Image (cartoon, rainbow, N blue to C red; front, side, top):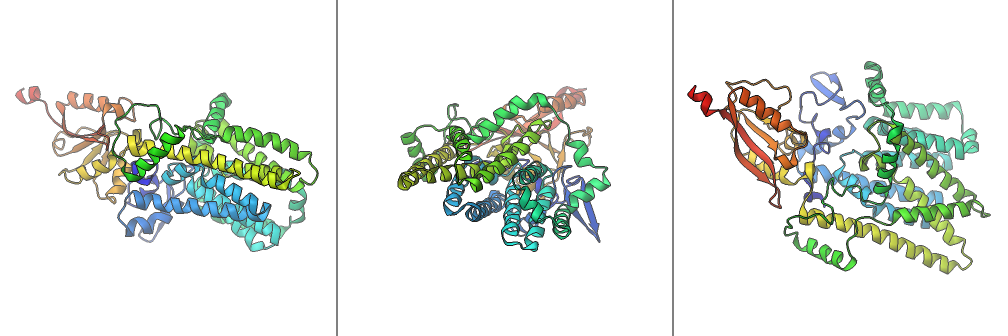
Amino acid sequence: MLPHAGLQNDEVLFATPIFHVPAATVFDAQILQWRIPLMLLTYLGALKSWLYFPILTLLRPSFLTIRLPVLIIGSLTVWLFIWLLERAGGRTVAWVGGLLLATDTMFLLTTCFDWGPVALQHLLGMAGLALVFKFASEGKPSALFWGFLCFGLALWDKALFLWLFSGLMVAAIVVFPRELWSRCSLRNFGLAAAGLCLGALPLVAYNAASNLATFRANSSFDLAQLPSRLHALRITWDGEILWGYMVHAPWSPGTPRESGALGRILGAVRSLAGIHYHNELVPAFWVALALALWLCFTPGSNRARKTLLFCLIASAVAWIQMAITKDAGWGAHHVVLLWPLPQWFLAVVFVEASHRLRWRKAGAMALAAAMVFLAGENLLLTNEYFYQLATYGALGSWSDAIYRLSGEVGRIQFAHLVVDDWGIANSLLVLHGGGLPLVMAGGREWDQARSAEDVWIGHTPEYQQTAGADERIVRGARSAGFEKQIIETVPDRNGRPVFEIFRFVRAAASVAH
C-alpha cells in the first residue's frame, strides 16, 4: 500500500524542523549554535522529529523513508500486545488479540500513513502497560520507572495521550484497588512520578514557559457534538471512515489504471468475495458485550471479569474526553487512539466464553471459526482499500500527483516557489530534502519587480483544500495589473489534473497603458 498515496501535509509535519523551516516549532532549546526542536504545536511534541533526524539526513527522502519506520513501529506494537496478553491472560488470548489487531484495517492504515500521528502513541502506550504489568507481577521497581517514562514520552509525543492515560489510571483505581494499595509506597510513587516527568519534560517545560498553552488551546468542550462523535466511533470500529477521505469509495466512478500483478490478484479476490466496505466488528462487539455480562455471573471468571472491566472503563473514560473536546474525536486518527483496548476486550471475552462450553473441543472450534471469520473480514476490507488505492488512486491531499509535481518543480528555474494552498508545502519540502525556496502565499504583498521571477503552485479547482484561496490571489494579482498564466497542469497516475504550476505576467492592457 505504501506508494499508492502521496505524502500528505500532516503526515510529514514532523520533518519540517529537520530541514530548518522557519516557524516549524512553537518551542525549542538553544544549545551552542544548534536549535533543538521540542514542540511542533501546542499539543504535538518533536519526539518523532528526533527519531527521524538520522533517517532523513542519511537517506534520500521518499515514501519508504517516511512510511517504513512507522510500519516497523506498528509491528513492534503488535508484538508487545501479544507479549502482554500472553502473560496477563494466556497464550490463546494473546494469539486471538494479536490476530485481531494485526489484521485491523484502521490500525494498519493509520499507522502506515501516520497523519495523526498515532504510531508512537500506540507503541509507547503499549510499552508502558507492559512494563507496569511486569512491575505488578514481578515486583521490579525499575519496570515501574521505565513504564511511566514511556507514558511520559507518549504525552510529549502528543498531549492527547492524556485521554488514554487518564482512562488507564481511572480503570486501574476502580478495578485493582487492593493491588494498587499493596504497592503504594513513597518509593514507588516517586519512581512513577520521576519517569512520567522525565518523559514529558519538554511538554512540562513548554507549558511552564507559555502559561499552560497546551491546556488553554485544547480544552474547549462541546457536548452538542456527542452524536457525531458516536457515529465516528462506529465507522472507525467497522473500518468505513476513510472512504471518501483518503480512498475512493467502492461505488464511486473513476478512471482505473493498471495496478500490476498484485493488484490483479487482489482484484480477483474482490470479485470472488464481493465488495467489502466495512468489517464485522460492530456485531462482534455486541455479541462480546452480551457474553461479558454472562461471564460476570459465571463462577471462576474473576480474572477475566477484572480484565474486561479494565478495558471497558479505560476505553469509555478516554472516548468521552475526546468526544466532548471541541473539534476532536471526529476522525480515525483520534478514535484509533483507543486501540488496542477493544481488541483486548474481544479476545478475553471470546476465549473465556469458549472455555465455558461443556465440550471443550466444540468451544475451541467455535473460537477458531469466529476468529477466522473476523480476521477474514478485516483482511477483505484491507483488500478493498488496497484495490481502490491501486486502481483509482488516493483522494484530496493524499493524491499521488505530489510525486510528479516534485519532479516537475525540480526542472523549473525560479527565484521563489510560492504555494497558494494548504497541503502542498510540507510534502514538497520533504521530497526535496529542504532544498526548495518555498514561500507561502498567505499575507504575501505583491512585489511587482519580482513577480516575473516567481513560480506559483496551487491545486486545480476540484482539489482545492482551502475554499477560494486561488480566486483571492488571482483577484489580488489583477488589481496589481497581472494575469495568471498556466505553465503546466500536473495530473495523478489516473490522469486527473491535481496541481497547477503557473506564474503571473503583466496584463496586456496594463502593458499598453
